[in-house]
Length: 323
Image (cartoon, rainbow, N blue to C red):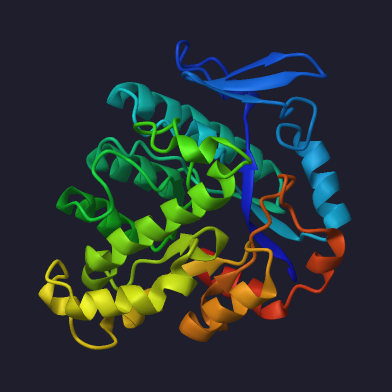
C-alpha cells in the first residue's frame, strides 16, 4: 500500500432520519440538494448517488486517484456531540455497526468509530465495542464537546485508547452544529471552513497540550486534521506562554516542554501549501505526518499530487493505524 488516506468522510443511508428532529436528513433535488442536521442546513452538496454514499463509486474513485487504502470517518456534520446522551449513544452504535459491515466487505477500506462524547464512560464502552467486536481502527471526534479535552473525566477514555492500542483522530465541525454558535464573521466567504477550522484545531491542541493530556498519557496517539490548523505558525508564541504565563501548569514551564509535547501529536498533511508543511515538519519531523485528502471534498488534491506522495507517509500511516 503506497497511498493510505486517513481523511475521508462518509454518509450512511441507514443513519438518515434516525434521530427524527435532529436528522440527519437529505432533501431538495438534483440541482438544489441539501443536508440537514438539527437547525443546520448544508445546501448545494449532493450525497446520494455519489461516492460519499455509494461504495462502488467510492472504490472506483479511489482507484482513479491511486489510493490503495482509505479509512472512512464520520461526516463532521453528524458528530452529535451536544444532543441528549442516550440519543447520541444509539446513533453512534447504528453508525458504527453500519461502518463495520461495509469495511469488512472491502479490504481496501478501514473505519473510524463515532463516539458519544457527552459521556466519557459511554464513549469508552463504545470504543471498546468498536475495536474488540467490530474491528474498527480507532475513533474520530470533533474539536468541541461538552467537557473539553482537558477535563479529568476524559482520562478514562484516553486510557481506553491506550489499552486498546488505537489512535484518536480529531477534526472540527462547522460552527453552529455542535455547541453554541460562535462567530458571525465566519459566515461569509467560507471562512468557517478555512479560518474557523484552523482556529478550532489550534485551540484543541492548546487544550490538549497545556491540559496535560499527552503529559499524563504519553502513549496516546492523537492525530489532528489540516496540519493542526495554525499550530506551526503559533508554536513559538505558545511555547513562550508555556514558560512565562501564570496560567501555565507548573510541569510545562520548563524550557522546551511545550514543543516536546507537540512532537507527540500526529498530523494529516491536508494544508495545500508546501511552505506550511515545511514549517510543521521543522517542528515535529516527517515521522509524525500522514496523508489526508478530504476525499471528494471541495479541497481534495488532484491525482498527480497523490502520485507524487512520499512513501514515508504510508509507512507512518501503517504505524499509526497498527496495520
